[in-house]
Image (cartoon, rainbow, N blue to C red; front, side, top):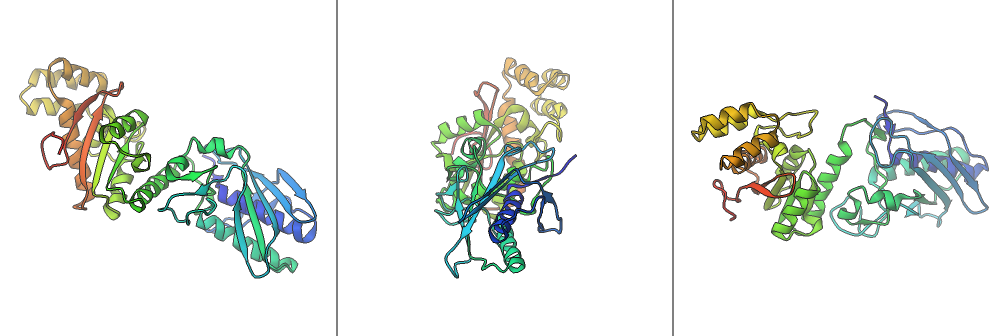
Length: 361
């Protein structure tokens, strides 16, 4: 599958071209940049604009075969002279967000341009200044037209990044379906929750389970982690950066996978173990039901069979899922409870935060 380039790499290319034009009057096209692991991709310019006091260059982001919401977005860099001795100053233009909450690797009030892209752009400015006798004192304004709308489909509103997208990328390369950006967002969500003093966070597999757990416990948006399929990412990060209480909420099928020990709940990487579900009934002496569950079509079918028989399979899945979660947390000071829902958002199983049973404590 085809690799792509991060917004940080695109912003670096645009900055390189804009600053070169500001000093020489000409835009290099294509423009080559050096990325952290030694790659030297070339970027074609989609926009060139030179005035007496600034230069703007734009690059269309190509995310390769990754399903990135910013694929096809225009990343613009406008470079203008800065105050002597000030070095590189970053500003958020149209469609680039501003940090409003603690817990991120940027101070509150700063443009949402992450540290590695900042370093890459600063190094690019130094190289261009050295080649063309520039001072290196510049203001870089990064813009992404339409970015504020695109940001609604990202974690930024929940992380307290308002006004648009973040300029991201630690390597400059987008690896297709690596899901690294999602996992990084989970980590940032934990960091923000900790910085805001939250003692109770929730990881949910989807919007319905998130709504259920938020309403049940009255959790604010900043305490909600969009876990998706990455239960392992949540648990492993909380193992190193604990929060006193974690609620896990998700659908019966996905949490059946967690109960079986799977930490990646995606349908392409783990499957529901109907044998495990059948064993829960068999262990309770419900042998006939166990046989029917073993031959069920889906996890939903197994749930329906159990409900019709008055068997609390949801609670047992919740208990197993919590046991797996506690094993991953490895004695970190995090109390865990689990809520299992059906497709309509009805709670079909749950545990408390104690070490056994299913009461709310």
